[in-house]
Image (cartoon, rainbow, N blue to C red; front, side, top):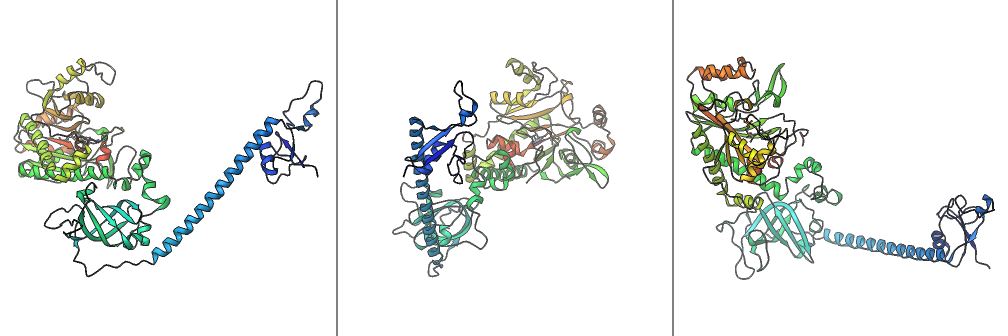
Length: 575
Ligand code: 4AD
């Protein structure tokens, strides 16, 4: 019997198993036809719509079936062979996968039968946090003659890996990390075989030194003899595994939406642990200086730092604001409490998306009675350096700071002092332009970018002082020697810029009322503040330090957003 003939129409044919390859149901490509019927069949082709029409012929000549060219046939045969190979490989892979799945199911079914029990004949297990290294509490075994302490630890799986019959887990509890080893039946249990990152566990075992040449946190490892995963404490796996939700490649906005998960990362947790230590250190240092802590209200009806950044809200049908600064309230505490401070939230309706502006930030503010402007500067540099000393006296916190900012050193005192006018000259000399792209001139508000450039070049803390009255808050007094400027200070730090804003306060009643008038604020609602000047006024001053900016500098973070738990800024109020 003659070889059957199959037809290919490159214009109207269809490559499909439903097609027969006959004249009325042709294929589209020769490759498909060869793949379907083998290379020994006979093939005829045409392009019924776009084919060449020989000179002198009419368009119907396109409809003539022509034999296939040799080269086209060779190409089609190669294509068919490659397709066959690919299909065979896919089949093979599928079979392999199915076998693997069946094998895994078998292993897991077997694993379910392994029930581990705590060996009650073993010594009592001492409950410790993962960073416990006190030799009076924990002794390390050496695997031969010295027995280590048996401990009970709780934590979450930070990392896990399997090496043949042994499982290595890095456990995390917020205090530290511990390497844990599962061997024998422990490593073969269903829970061990299906262990996912972030699962919470309770583990008991003996603490031993790591073998020479191996590395683990605190040079030790926990040789587990029992573990437990409490009901409901397994972390999601598969597509929903934490590693699939947050990774190095996850988009920035998604990371912010998933802040509750990114907080579990090493960097974020280090920054927040340093933050806790810094806040505590401020309290210690202020106590050393015999300053009293107060807690002024957050819901207020007066402004401190200008109307543009006020968050307004309806307070029982009256207009009220979220506080911009506790300063005015602190001032009222001086007569009865002496020097005071607070660490409270301040709120700014900043409409800018810079790396150092938040809508809600932690504000460390202090107010000092009977001082001069020089006293204020000396106090400020003392507080900042002492806070750093106290913070770094905790070895874990110091290590975290060095991990985040390896070059960090406590700055030397005194800090560099630079008057605003000197800064303007410096910016002009260094060709740094103002916001209008012109050389800086007296009266310009030094913008964030220029300020940071200057601070980065000088590369040490700067007390920038004596700003013109026009660009500073109404409550700042004029300098006696140069009435164009005020007794004001910004502390600038490399990498961040301004982290502190402070000043002396106008303490003369009439002068203060005139200052209110100058900025067009009605002094009436401020009666509780102006009364301060009526009843035993005093030369006093104070400052506010942005805790997140201080941390961004200390921990070398690009943005203040990474220095708070759940950042709030223009356009973000979640999670
Ligand atoms: O310079 P500011 O606005 O000064 C005051 O509020 C004074 N009443 C403080 C006082 O004297 N008690 O703010 C002080 C500091 C800034 O130097 C900065 O570190 C921080 O507060 N700060 C902000 N931090 C994050 N986001 C914002 N939007 C901030 N605005 C100010």
